[in-house]
Length: 540
Image (tube, rainbow, N blue to C red; front, side):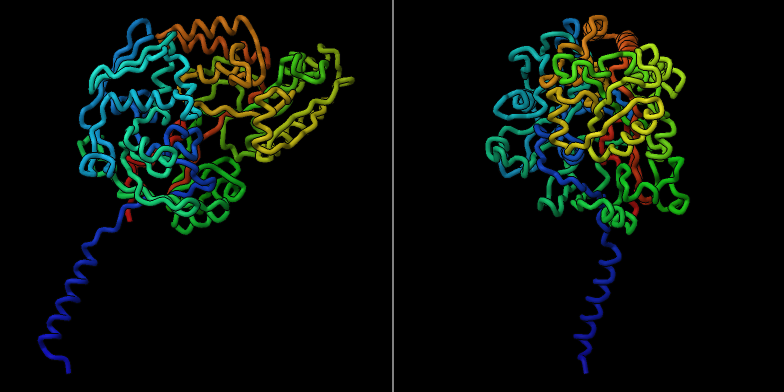
């Protein structure tokens, strides 16, 4: 028989244990999957969305973008622009700290100064770093980044560049401590030390990455409450999209982004709406995405192997643009996720987008008339055109191939792998190719740069090798214009020239599509498809 004293002790312990279980708060953890894996957490190499998402949780820059693409203060609380847009002076907060690290005195934290930004930005420029973001600072004058004191940073440009503030919102421009770079060197990718709302806790590549709340984060919400709300972020690396989708349905992942063959027809209807069976369980969030999907023509006769290629003829290019139904394409191949590109090259969602720029709609009579004017009635005598794509866009290309065949326009489709395809496009080896352009910053200069004659690939993004003096003059004029409304008007004029010359075949303006469980609060989207988790909370 158990002694009374021992029994009393055991009952007390049981009571305390039950009480503790009731009062323990479940961690507020947000979980998502990255099917493509994460190669680095160093912001100097955050060149793709896969890398930008986690880096955005760990680091901050001088400025940041809100969901409306407006430039807002971040570590810089204010700034001044002088000398006709060639001198930027940033005034920094004095209450921003790097994450705790044993590299700092007493193994604690250290305040961020303007010297840290001078070091961090020059590190991106330094060829030894090998950052793919070095181009951001092409307009910066030699030795143009200077810390004037602990809280004042000055950047001088060689020429005015109105989009410069937008460039500074990119993760490349995050502040990092020199001590950590000096100590870890290339292995900083595994040991990131930043200022962001979350800090690294655990990372086993290919299995799991855990970021925990930064208790000393400097930003607060509108009510003065400290950010972030979440306790942690857990990232898994399931590379199979079907398995990822099943984990989402089981509730083991809190959100998925975009559509894939594994989930497209299950999650949404043909009209692009959430499947009614998931009402009350899943929220679908969608909005315009700053991404234009297109087909591009190589217009440089010195690069085209077939000097008589039909793509050199503007009327043929225009005929192709009129020769297929974009709305039908979006309905049956994309479940209406995306907007048919019947305006210009600048996508919907960009501040300078305008319905006033009229593009191409399906007009079979116009296609036939243009072919006749070009000397190829009903396509007779017209040489076949080779269109090169990657496998993930093959269905779109086959649809266009079928539509154009009714006019006698013969399209041969070549499928190439991603790396090989990108190299062939960059080195002007394809007469007709599938392309997409996702904005790096919220200014249409990002799109117009693809057609500026001084940006010929492979050193620039002008993959079509399009050259038009009127376009170039407008581009230069826009770069010297600091008034947004006037600059936007110039962009629209440039966009009309591109459309009239049929340099490309705009297909659709993409959309951000996210699916999230109903217990997630404060989860939003934006036209850049950035992942911002500092305002997110979760009901367990």
